[in-house]
Image 1 (tube, rainbow, N blue to C red):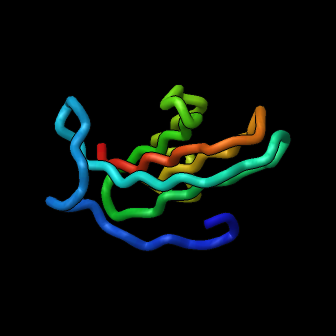
Image 2: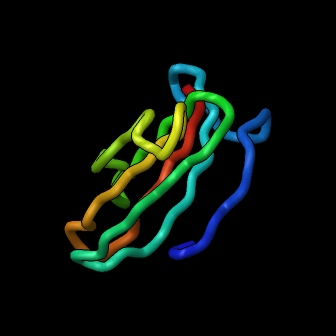
Length: 90
């Protein structure tokens, strides 16, 4: 997934948060000190969350992408391990 684009859409097959929002989940292994940029481009308002392997939120973004309602997270990973990306609708 690192250096790759992932295309998908949220729909009835995606899990739902406690507040009723659908989300997609991706995981990746990162190295300590690794810089990551995660972008989500969409025609609707969206959110990105970066979590560690225990589900602790490290970063979140709503409208920090290039244009309009797109989301972007930039972050330097604090340690080597598994990380989670949650992409969801507003």
